[in-house]
Length: 126
Length: 359
Image (cartoon, rainbow over all chains, first blue to last red; front, side, top):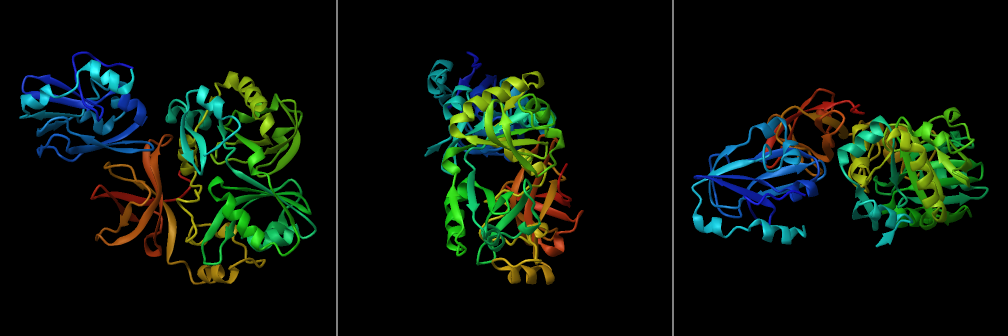
């Protein structure tokens, strides 16, 4: 399983990549593997502000439905529209084309509270 | 928790195990869609040894079967199988099952794992015929070898001419060097294939022989996850989802296995429902809009927002690449092409009633 060094992680198995004032958010390789074939990504918070740990959407696999928890508080500015027609990108490229949302307006304190790759690997036993 | 004979094998294959009907069962080996496609297009094997098997033996075995089941078992001949259900005394269904006629005085019943005890008690309670009943469930392993290439792989392992066996017939024969295997041309996938019943002690030998014979067809083990998507694409009812202790077989579209040419428990009740037309019906539907996958207990509404029913099963169909489901709706909304709405996360997502099977 793949866990890039340059990302931050949460115990809910989301990853965060900070690019300037934007945070890209998705689910980890571990999470997509556990869920299996992703068939729908439902983000109902576009344009809305969310708190840290709030549910910002839902991901559906063939057999399961899971809530997505926001790693940071801020505003959900964009959904990865490619997932609308190709949700399987979450399986095939969890950290790249499978990104889910962008969040802005987050605070640095929350960012520094996220897990680094070493801690996340320990969490999932990798 | 109970364990099937091949539990350790499934674990060693990396299966994700879940508790299902009190058994530790493989729900997934590697990838649900690959397992699904292996069965649809080639060959896959399910270990469904959790299923229950009862043997009913005696001069009046048929009388007992006729009383407790809804289909007409008197039309069966030796070697023939029938899909049927056990109506309860409240208008619902105790279980759905397969009835095998071994001989005029011997019937083999295959029931759902979750209902073994309930079925056993129910049938025993009505056994005023002196029929000898044996519960073979714990000692029997069942491998469902399914898919268009199942027959080619299995034919290598037996002298029984499988291509001469019609759908819903069975034979006892030697297969993979195991004598007296119950070879049944049945399955829960609509993909063709056979179900093989053997004593637990032979399960490992049978599994290995099947995988060797199927290697050239890229045979795969398939879990309960794929079993569910496969059965749903074919519109087969799942007990606990689409039918249960409270659903009527007529409303469930099981009129074809509910025969009023004979008497059985609650026959008059079900005949009245049929004669008066059921007020609700189990229908298949497909989603017309994106917005999520229909799931059990989702509410079904009409265009005006009135609640007209509830989803009983739903999935993304791997073969059709669209979201499909089944559910009960008011009879007025049950016609094919009727527009309905599935409530998913507080949104009404458009769907339409379609014919089943979905493919």
